[in-house]
Length: 487
Image (cartoon, rainbow, N blue to C red; front, side, top):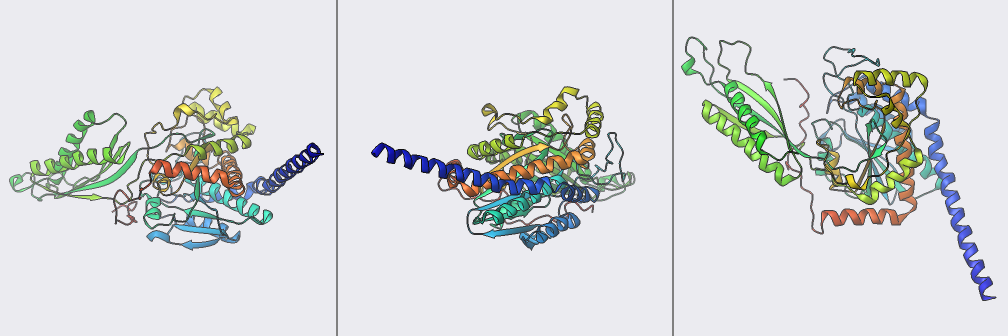
């Protein structure tokens, strides 16, 4: 009799568990079906932003498109947050857990390109979405709306927030969200990026700081009385020469880049009184970053001393940390990325992709990889990518999980005309919808399985340390809202 009762109890528990799973999958279908039936909506949104590419902090139309769509789908939108006119937070639901999704929408200068598999600018010297942020924001918004549909259908308590973050390309918009404490109270954040592969992010990034060095000298007639002049351009050139010599003596994974933003005049027979150079310094951690920065600063001071000029250093506020990875979160996203699977191109898309591949000398067999999801690779976890992202500052405030789906043609370099061309077609849109599905499935897992959220939070707290307190690399500085405006 006792064995019969125990067996009956086990049967009831198993039946209940199976019913819960079946109910979860039924509710998941609401989110996935919404995305499957919304290709036209998100194809139109991403292409409208692609067609009007706007630079960092200037994304008025792009941001407005996302805000309008989220408002129409029941989200409460707060505009102009953290001192940035194009930034927003869109919220749906109530109570815990609170899940955030990051959205971007800024373009790059000089990358105007038509949706053709050869170089053809729409506007010579114009802007273009070479990093696919028109796709990034659209995929994030699509995922958020799908999660909202599921929250409604399942009557689940919880909150979804879309963080519309401008100026990722050099402006560091997310840094100012973090500085303003806008990630306080958020349990977890989902992130993705357009890619040429379907894979979770297992690598960290480089910390980065931006600095401008403005040299001031004395104008004079370059032939008549050159002895009275002090060339600001000489200061810039002397600094650059010393920094180029410095490159041999920094760690191999560090990076230094510069552009002369003010060349010091228009006429060779006038000694330039003003000149400016803009630098990025990147390193694997904050300590190393400031060590290299000090040496670059010293080069500026030495150049000013040697040329009889003065230099003013301006550290910009969009400096960013290296990404803090989270292994349990990464593995959860991997599971859902595998559930969604790879991308299927039709004949027209494949023909387009082959022509793009020819322009980058990519082998045809590489195109087959878009149909698959790269397996999770434990050996690459924690390796360094030689790039930087302001997602990093978010990752030190709240656990962040990141992944990519195929929106570009394998073999295409980052920030390229090839990416602009492919991203503005249905190839880009298919990657957008795949990303939205991964967002939906992962959020549903987190809403319905508290143990998953707790394991991710425990890893996060362990990696940061007990007494960790986030401080921006350049504290007390607001966004440089005009950094993309030619002066």
